[in-house]
Length: 79
Image (cartoon, rainbow, N blue to C red; front, side, top):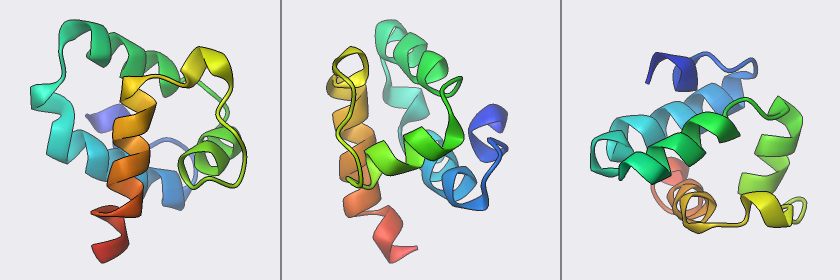
């Protein structure tokens, strides 16, 4: 979870850190692996994907990305 709070941009620290706080304990090992791999992607790309500013590349368009996008649209907007 530490890594999700210190990604590079303050926006992503809030979005991905908040997601990790809320959902990390409920992810399957496979989902956790996808989340960890996603954190290695470019900070600007991640922000654009989860906020809908750019389409998510096919290799990242999976259930974990859908969960993050849903979190960003609902829960993170209330923070």
